[in-house]
Length: 352
Figure 1 (cartoon, one colour):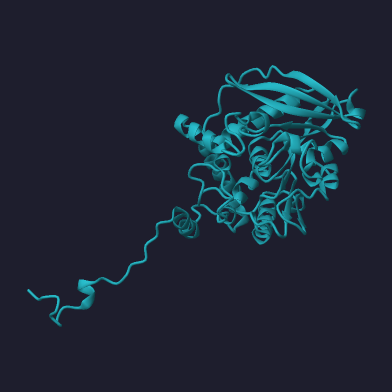
Figure 2: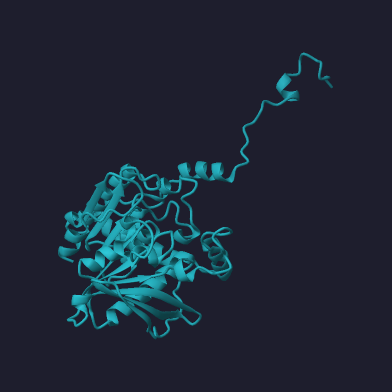
């Protein structure tokens, strides 16, 4: 047997060349993200798009799972405030046997006596919940529920799970700013999905609006920023009662959004979605209804170039489905990850 000093034995057999190893879960995720190939991408041939969309619908339904059993909403108005040009009512309603939703219902004063008219379900993003979008806290740019009620719409603004009044008090801001992570753990152990849980709550919120005497059931829109846009997109994709949707600071792609380390939340993803369900796929289920997408040129979370490409693809999907591609509007504005609202009035005043 040759000894280590024997020149016939290659040095690398004794001391292997250094091997690149990775100890970072984030780096591993990033490499995986770049390697994913879509299993069923949107086809180029227009004739194949309708069948593709039905496959998307089937995949989405499977990922969401079965909804919980419905319970009576049993709505209760617990407070009413004169907010000047509108009335703000705090209401509670049930969505599951063990879960209720707090929300504000904003009603323009000139709508208080009827007749039934249009309404918007305004969905908040990460932050303090319904309080901010109703103008009770935070910067004016984020007060989009306030903008909507001042445009004449009845506006319902529920707190999503883990936000606002639904943030568990034991999680102090210093310890756990949002308890989304805890909810993800609990849902995972129970075989549930947080996104599907919040989607159910929003579908029940639509039930509330449909039954409200001041609301025309055929004229209900949904609007949201960031996580609120995630939920607005999924709600419009799964509930045909939504006539129009505003998606602000979100529509782009999973790959682009989740390549940012701090843009991760367990409440806005679905098991097995990567490579099987893209933003475009979900948005395709909204056709032929109108959608307004807002994208900031400096948004670090949802890159504007990816948003432009997704919007262009969505317009092709609309055309392939026989819908007007002009119903896909894109407001690209100078700024970051925020609500813009410059085209909200004109968009909602259009046909839907």
